[in-house]
Length: 376
Image (tube, rainbow, N blue to C red; front, side, top):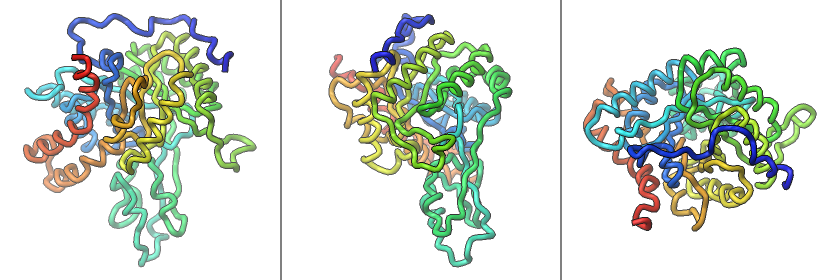
């Protein structure tokens, strides 16, 4: 572990730049104060109407960053939602959230879509796949609604006949730089896995080649190591927190050499935050075990985070903030369905908007207020 930690003097911009006086609750200040909140719309989520409403409501609720798929139509929908929020007289939308897009350096569950042929399903199938899908991505007539699927994988073991497979959706290397130059996001997130340092370095160079001035380069990684080559038939072997820290130190050297500022997204239990308290404990436990060994830069909880996460944090923790994914989408899902049935955006229906904003603030506001009473 000593060799892995011997890389802090990498050339690059300072890790913490002075903040302007009017940025008291902006994204960088929130990271510094441990109050950062990010909405994850889903790296594979292409449900444009829902994305537009999610971005509008959660921006009004005060998130500091919104993470979406690296897709032109998705980014356009997110920006429409952010523009709507900025025009509203109430809420925290005066501090515009950063727009972040997600990429991967290889196969990753966040970048997959479920698929199956509904014609192979028995007529009397009770459709357990449909019951367990949190995104309502399996239609009443069968088959996957691709734009809604964000790759949680819960349908895969649910099918009694094993008919459901998955398809990876990885952006081609030559497409990265021109796409980012066109989208011009505020930040980029790179999903990686232990053992993929060279693919990470290549993807990072493609990001750098875009020429986009990024506020942060987020690195999303967890303890699971994807098997490759001769080991592909074996179950993946989890790392220890110290081994994961060594992987992050290696990436820290690359990120800093590229002139970028890192943000470490610790992926505890990916895409499972709507399940319960156990997933929240897994995300917090990863932070507690890793924080003493992690490289410089903010440490952000993700993967299984939900409304229980904040209360589980031990004193003296280094959490810079949290990302909410499936729990944030799931709690608004019934309201989004009602708006869809009404044929109008949720944000344009006053009663649905009020209820949605109340739910969103219930998730976001405890983090935004974190430590304020103690400081005062």
